Image 1 (cartoon, rainbow, N blue to C red):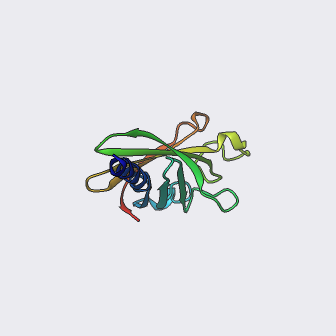
Image 2: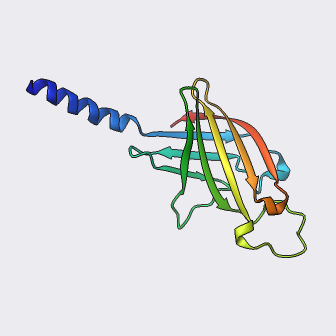
Length: 142
């Protein structure tokens, strides 16, 4: 009985650490969009499920990655979302400054769990006429 209890706790301990994962993703982004759509992202999910995302456009806060969140998870796909401000998003109101709350961009990353192909959707605020782009890429486990 003691052996069974120790085995159960050991398996729970090992599966807790096995749940941590990290992805290194590269996306094919047009030259015009590279200031507001990331060409590379690092997505880390720790043992507690906390998601952190960092990329060449997704700026860090005081050197730390931005907190993201997991949305849909199935056996086939994992989807992560992060929102941040970006000064370089396209807008039709370029002749006047845009308030910080309107410069928010939502990045949704969807990763296929079989071949690690990925899609990134960047969506701006609706006040900026709903600029949205979808780009393809690939990820690998770090």
